[in-house]
Length: 76
Image 1: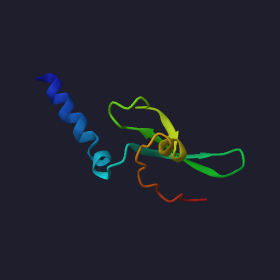
Image 2: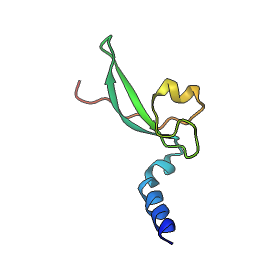
Image 3: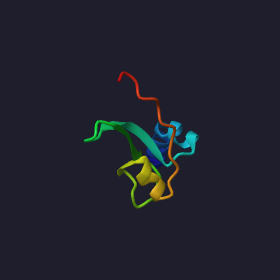
């Protein structure tokens, strides 16, 4: 019963992620050595070998994972 309650809480925490249909969540931006910015994502696809890994959009696509919406870079 405790396990079930934990799972329900976890599903509620991930509700926004699952609604998008994406297999990852946007983390933020990383500056490259050339001065550009690259969006980074954490893999949230349960059971995927890369679950919990941080990847770029290119990395997600290479693994056939659905990329979430990428927010516009603000401030710079």
